[in-house]
Length: 300
Image 1 (cartoon, rainbow, N blue to C red):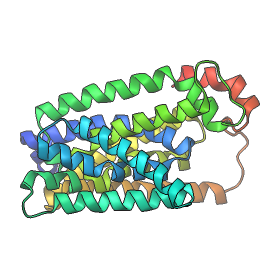
Image 2: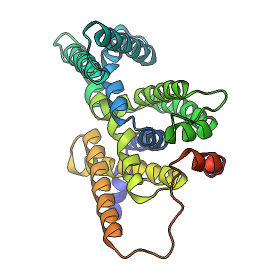
Image 3: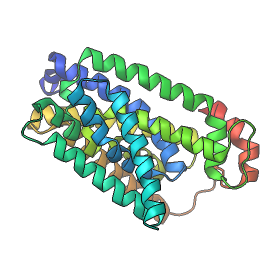
């Protein structure tokens, strides 16, 4: 048993993969809670696919992925606006048309015979290929994302639960959504080299969705989410090492197992007898937010 546990830890590439997934798990676990609370799961996945041609272009040109991803998002936003106005389509339809078209273009470029082999990793990812440089980049961008989320916690909490009336000085609902979308884009850039463009949304949405089944408190949700994300990363690396399967896919399978277990626990709790005391629920009205946002901010 000890050999089974210790064998992966004797290799530098698995240690780097575990460190990379732990960093990504912390960032993805925290920002995933805001994605769930602000109900932008579809937007987060669409954002990842929309920036894919920019990521491939950056890799082909040898420029930073951050620049390529930024250009990809800006182009996607412009095209969505043009399609919605010129074709008279709804916003959802315009997003679907543009995102699928851009993603198809990115896949075409990534899988072209003339494309260098390393570019395909942007599509499928490979945690075991993480380098020391990747760890430093993940840590730097992750700290930036977490610092901004911590600084904006109260405003994001209030606007997330009551966007129609929560007008807090210094940050309007529209600006809050733009800020959150920017942080999601940075998180995608952090995770795309680890899990690839196809699977990166799983680490942003899966852990938070799992945690949401187990608790209704913001602080507890974030703690559970990070624990699930990091735990799935560790489980995925061990599964990949011993079963000789793709590491990124193994991580996503572990996330799915955690979600199913949490769903089962939630179902059992819901079918059981009512308890005498209940944990304080997450605020759902503007009055609750006004009275509790600072408390939740202190907790998280």
